[in-house]
Length: 243
Image 1 (cartoon, rainbow, N blue to C red):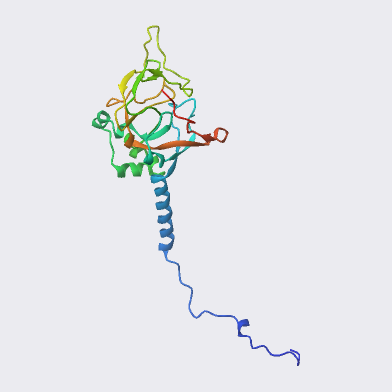
Image 2 (cartoon, rainbow, N blue to C red):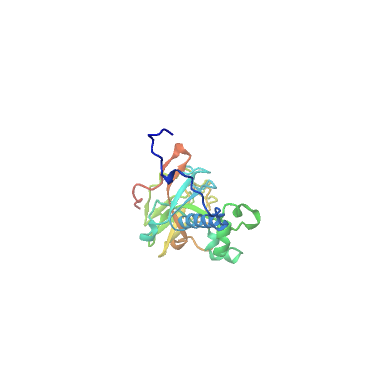
């Protein structure tokens, strides 16, 4: 140090030593974060939005097997389903009285466990009543719906346009085939749902305990396909199909 350089009295230059040793983080901090994350994810899935995939060919050709969709759960809290909308709902084993009497039905806790990603993959916990179906709304309350052997639909005496249907039921020379017909009025609080692939869809025509889906069994409305990327886009009909 030169004689002209003043001696520094700055104590901030000295290293600061902690008089106490660092605390070990409690394991609860990690598990609390895990629990909060799971709770938020389950809450979003239960009340707002969830992703689903197409497991079968009942909605061909518009929806292909393994397509991934987004299902929202807010719209039907404010209004009823409309014709042409694609809905995801609890399997008929969850609400059909005949299927329940044959061993269907499941508790909410059982279905919660079945729908968890890891537990649901176990073969011994599979439960048909906990499955979800996807179909298109065709008839709404008060409408007189007729479905012929081909799977063509008339409502209140008028044939409806269904550009999404390409595969009808096969019939013989007498007009008879394997698909069931329907002639009924949609009751209040219910809708008629059919698959777009009319020749290969287990829908309201075939349910043993009743043809119509209770609106309370609807999980949500499929509104967006996000995979495959070349088919990315909206699933919401531009306008309700008029009878």
